[in-house]
Image (tube, rainbow, N blue to C red; front, side, top):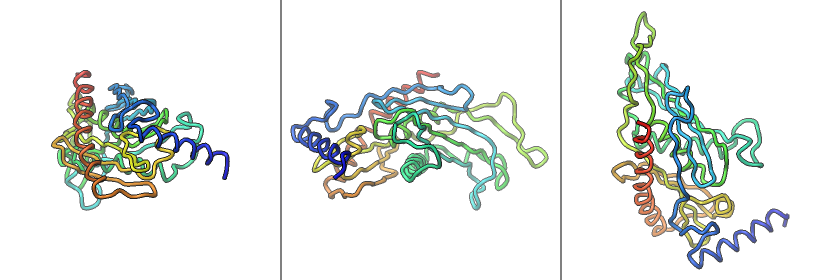
Length: 272
């Protein structure tokens, strides 16, 4: 047994001992999210942007909007693509180079939550059907890692999209031409909120920090829309969830999602 795994075992033991008393290593209750701070307009040159701090985890999301060719068989819809990267400054373990599986999954989970909720009305982002559409590209950069990148990136992307303005283009001579001074809000139908929960032993904790993330047995990320409907779900880790645990996680995602949605709305209104 290596030095690192002994430390991990001791860490997990102390985390579990606290959980038995209904406490967590950072003093939170089991269903408590770390403080969430959202700053709109972090990147002046972007079409929309946000900086999110979830506890000590920090993410910047920037939105770029430009004309693009539609996806095959989807000529009547604009495009939404979400990416994520963890910058080497975020954590000592981060290496430069191509994204690893964790980062690929991170981008996919954030992308799916927003896509499956139909947050953006992509049918309104068409310049000319089958020829040219508006592409919305959200890029997340993790600046500081302290656990639960799924939710931090999701909130940053959502806040950036809520604050985004899309330019207008018209087709001229078979190519899209910018219409000066004709910006409008990105067409938003709902505000998706993801809530990530970790299972440690027999306990479920919301918004796991880095230590909890390292020793969890399983995790689940559940995204709800503004009506409180579950629209996306992603499970990970080596263990599973019992039926009653899944029901509890679903309920937590709805009640906590409601509070975070208000924070997202306030951040947008504060900007207007």
